[in-house]
Length: 345
Ligand SMILES: *[C@@H]1O[C@H](CO)[C@@H](O)[C@H](O)[C@H]1NC(C)=O
Image (cartoon, rainbow, N blue to C red; front, side):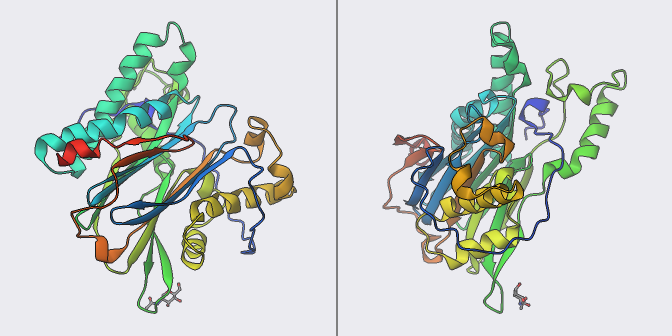
């Protein structure tokens, strides 16, 4: 069991800023091919169903990183919402999955424990990198990232989360209506708890909370929240997204959008919905927002990452996948082989 301390770098402490704005569920199907900051994978296969992914860039340098890894009878999703620069989220995107595969391979299973182990190994690696490079790149010490990952395998969904990204399950209830169930708790809601924890670890330093992005005291015993669910036939899809989406779209609105529209491009539709609402909040039209360049965009919305993983039930128990093992990274135009093959070999 990795009880090693998970330090501040992975932790995402941002002020709670949720808007409860109800907006008409209008169909914003305008063409957005002219939005060069919007990336998407309209619809791809994983061995248990389909998935759709989309990312919109708002920051000068994109801070959201993400990946979907497809394996035999398994799929892995990661959403890494960076802050204070892209270094932490990029590092997680480059290393966390490899750590998970290495850990899990030794034991032959992917478990809550191997997930936690992957989080702490990634964090140790990043801290080492920071120590090594901060002489040259002092700003790296201010970089952090939220980290949300999900794995579906053998009919079970595993989720680990640190920060305020969210996984939301869409399932059919007994009246055959789609209902949202949030599978993660927003870590920033527990902010006060975290502060108290920091204070008790560093009673001599009253500024510890102010120093939350510094590395002088990179100590926090907050581990990711890990959740396991045995999937039911009524569970239809899971939406993984950074808080850029959830700031503007409620859980229930999101699952209804996914449920009532065709699958291709569904992640892009969610991103666009959030941008649309963000534009309206600033008294702007979506068409004008599309022309706002990155960096300035940040005034209107955050980087937004959405991955929708459909769970096609009849495939859940199938071990022999016919889909290739691929690694698809958010905002990247190249697709590589997934390290999943190491786990299954
Ligand atoms: C199913 O969900 C709908 C919409 O949220 C709700 O009105 C209905 O009461 C629910 N039915 C059951 C059996 O829970």
